[in-house]
Each structure stands twice: as structure tokens, then as C-alpha cells.
Picture 1: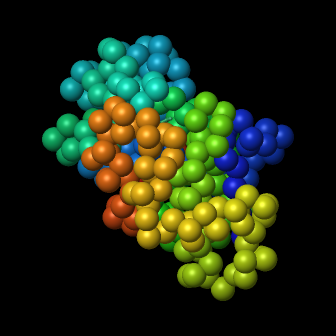
Picture 2: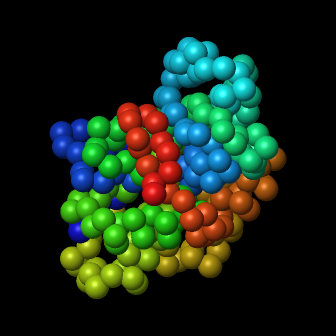
Length: 245
Ligand code: MLT
């Protein structure tokens, strides 16, 4: 297995696809997607474009759908909710399809949707992601950070490092065998720096600060938890994620 880290959808190569693409948006899209599926959502359908989300979801009965829209960290008018994982309670999402569009995370998912395997990872489901990789042994794995509007996000790289660290701890690979690009080494170093201070790391990160200005302290606390959800969102058809069995 060779791991490659790309910090943003824009930096992700377009000329080829990996065996497995793992999209990371710790704050907050992939945390929200994992939480919604864990709470019993029928599936999560991701859109980069909000108008398209409204058009497609309109074809679903109101009691079978939930529309989540976020831009700049804030909820989008016309949607049922923003992008807070804390809104994904079983009472709200069970049996419904979550239609979601966010500033960066859903764009990152779209960027790699032609890969044969597409997963959504965050700190909350890091171990479920690692377990999948250890069981299925894809040859090339891309860890794609969502970043912020084309720029790097500290928390996504730390999560990529958390996945690489855990793979190295649980498999017999040497670092040399696993590492596919320099970004993986950077991600590992960042994870080692912040692994016991993940919430503090969010407080240093630009998007963490943005969410704090929007009163998102509880979201940050939730997203900083590691290995608490034992499910893995996997793409079932382009743009639609369900639970990996
Ligand atoms: C994104 O896609 O950029 C986000 O998940 C932003 C957020 O809602 O925190």
C-alpha cells in the first residue's frame, strides 16, 4: 500500500485515480456525514452546488429528505440545517436521505468521485478507516484534505497523519514502504505534534477560529474526538454515500 496526501481538491491530480480515495473534512463535512449515517440516515448525497441540491432533493418526499447547506461556516437559507454534526440526531435523520452541500468538503468528494473506492474520514471514525484499509489492502490510497477555498487546512492534514500513524502502528509496513509523497511525512509530524491537543489545535486553525466566531465551540469539541464512531461512509454511486458493511 502507498499513501499519498493532497491538501486540497485543487492540488489533487486529475490525470489518474487511485484505488481508494479518502476525503477528509474534519471541520466539519466528513464528521457530519459519518455522524448522520451513524444516526440512521438512509444515505448521504453530496453536492458542490446548492441549486442542484435543492432541485434533486425536491423529487423526494419531505419526510424522507433533509437538506443541509453551509457556506462560510453558516447555514444556507432554504435548507433544513447547516453543517453541524450535532444536528444529526436519530430523531432528525433516521430513515431520511441527507442532501448536503458545503463550502469545501462536498467539492472534495466530487473531485475524486470517479475513483473505484471513495471513503469519507474524520477523526471521529479514524479507526474504522484504518480497519478498512488493513482488511482491503488497496494499492494506492489518496488522502484528500478539503482545505478552505483552495488553501491548506491544518486539521485535515492532522487527520491524514492520524490515519497514517495508526496504519503504521497496526500493520507491518515500514514508513518507507507506506509513504508515497512528502506530504505524508509532514502529516505524520503534525499529528505527532498535536495528537494529545486536538481541540487546542482547532483553536489555532483558521477554520476553527471561524467556527468559534460563529459560536461553534460544541462542534469543535465533538469533531476533536477520535475513534468514537465505528462506521465508515463509502460511495455507493457517484455522490451518494452509505455505510460500508
Ligand atoms: C466545508 O465544507 O468547508 C465545511 O465542512 C465547513 C463547515 O461547515 O465547517
